[in-house]
Length: 208
Ligand code: SF4
Image (tube, rainbow, N blue to C red; front, side):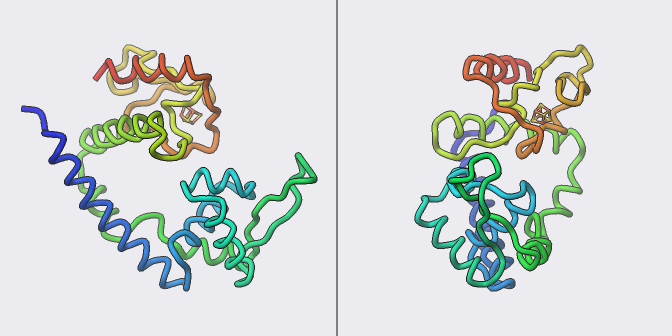
């Protein structure tokens, strides 16, 4: 019997509540709001970024982003520098103190890691595949910001191999991989054209 959508929605909602509360605690421990902590973490992971790109990735409005960056600048944790690709534009950058603070922010709530580690490989792979499909659907519906995920990447070749354990292929590193290695925030991601994204999604979703 397949799981009812209401139960899955309830489970996701419980996780979101826990995650949000843990995020507030972790950010608060560094004297930050969750949005300010997200900005530091994102800049530490991806490097300097234009305000518009940062706002899109975090799913916040331009005024909210501007306020948060101004507060971070006042605390000496972030600043702005000219964009080398367009001198009229500016990028948000971390200061050395901002980088130190970002390193203190946990990647995930402390209690989650051991729980995920306790799952079997096949359970983790199934979870990642399901979440990837949900996130891709929400992204296509315009409900959440675009993620740098395999399903939207021009290097992704879903079910390109016969090997059931590693059916997908990443053309960027020219290697096969399985559902358990799907990426949701890949630094090498390059957005595929819309038609190609739809084709990849259909093929990925059709073969369980
Ligand atoms: S480059 Fe990254 S996002 Fe793209 S297919 Fe390879 S692993 Fe996935």
